[in-house]
Image 1 (cartoon, rainbow, N blue to C red):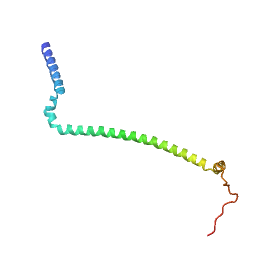
Image 2 (image 1 turned 60 degrees about the vertical axis):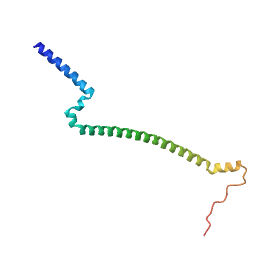
Image 3 (image 1 turned 30 degrees about the vertical axis):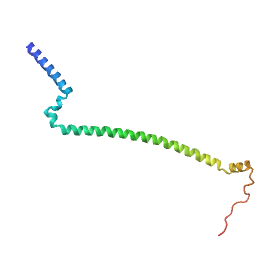
Image 4 (image 1 turned 90 degrees about the vertical axis):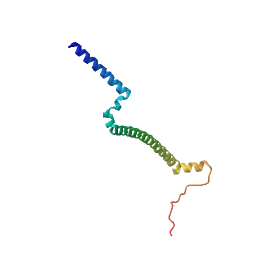
Length: 118
């Protein structure tokens, strides 16, 4: 009995070893099962490739979206800074100082504006 068990274990080991050789060597792809399921295997591979491509494209778009959001925030702050600088320079007191500093004869009107009738 012990010899039969040993022989069975040895034959199982050889079958397993042969099994791994057939997987690594590609012989398993020539079996009847894989020949019958070729279309399904090809479809699954195409779906896997599509999934990987879709995920990569999504990640690229998310990176681009983050970059554009940062750029938008920078542009908003820049526009706000320029707007405040323009308001500062266009105040009446700053304009009067600029005119006086350049030696112009212009003066601020002492009379309020009025509408010309039609």
